[in-house]
Amino acid sequence: MKKIISLILMILMFTTLVQGVTYNSIPEVELTIINQDPDPVSPGDYVDIRFKINVVSEATAKDFVVELLPTYPFSLDPNEIALRDLGDLTTTGNGDYSIRIKYKVRVDEDAIEGENQIKLRYKLGTSPWITESFDINIQSVDATISIESVKTSPEIISPGENAQVVLIVKNIADSLMKDVTIKLDLTYASYIDQVTTTTLSDSLSKFDSIPFAPLGSATEKKVKTIKSGEEVSFTYDLVAYPEAESKVYKVPIEITYYDELETAYTKYDIIGLVVGSTPDISVVVDDTDLVVGKKKGDVSIRFVNKGLSDIKFLNIKLDETIDYEILSSKEVYLGNVDSDDYEIAEYTLYMNKNVDSKFAGDIDLTLPLLIEYKDANNNAYSKEIDLPLKIYNSNKISDSKKSSPINVVTIIIVLVVLWFVIKRFKKSKKKD
Image (cartoon, rainbow, N blue to C red; front, side):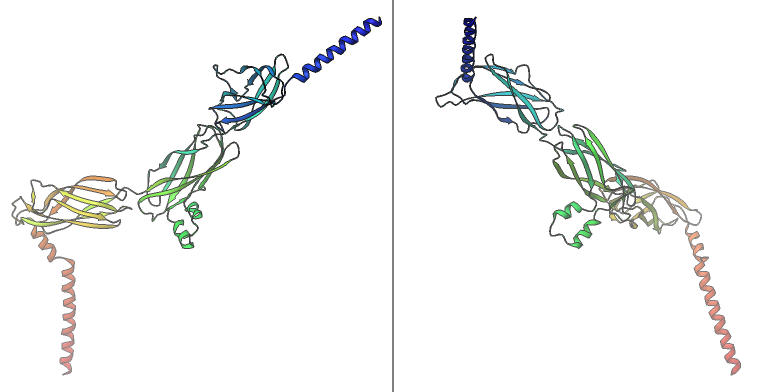
């Protein structure tokens, strides 16, 4: 019995000794990440991850196996091998040996930005697996909000008119954007803040240089989040100043937003708003000395700008008819006509109708006009007008002059004055 116990003790001591030798012979291994490329990596892209395996003891790392354990948001393509057998890793004389390995890893397009962990494990021969975790930085490089389009209703805003401006904004980044704010800077406040030499008078002049004011809402709009690839509309109600000059106005846009890592972004852009109105031009015969029986005479045509905006490059063309010939130039250039103003074009006509004024009545003519012009924003217009012209009988004109109210009043005044003179003369004669 004693012999059996002694034998068992000897076996146990031998086993313990062997285990101690084996344990002491397992080398010390360090796993470190060298870098990631790119750093940071954008969601939906690939990243190259390089690891360093360092044997820091003098023992040989036999049958060394390493395996990448990709979990969401990481994955490996089929041609990328996760498990790699590196064989025996033998140290140099100073007890230091290292090897580098690289994995090409895909990042999911919906990955959350920030530090995401990826796991790498290793073992030697039949020893248990040892797992370590490493941080991979994920962040959208192109964290950009862009203005895709600008719609105004109406497209051309008349002075004093209400308008609606709709900005279509798109998140072209690979990740969610938060607290997106868009401001229409109608007072150039962002511009003034960036200029250190701005005086008070400059600030006041800039304040009203854009002739628009918000109507029923503020000029700053905000949405909580915009997903990657999503479009969101921002609507602003404005009113143009009644005295706004017709032209294109540049309106600064300030955009602020945050990415998922709470990094703040600010960018500036410009949109254009057009102030103008459709020209309202009135055409009338201003004067003529043509009468029935007179072969040649002048006609003056008045062109009145009744619209809110100026008219530019006004050009008039008059065509001949069977009733008359044009002795002057058929085309008259009048140029610019300001709002609430007029210009006059004059023509000399030769009448083809040979009518005796003693027996003829009035004559109705038509003057076919082609009017070409542009508005203040250089939009071209062309109109054809048949302008009526009545030529009166000279006898009728003479009769009207004879019985005109002015002549009657003149006669009455003369008679009254004459009566007072005669009356005074009689009084003075009686006294004598």
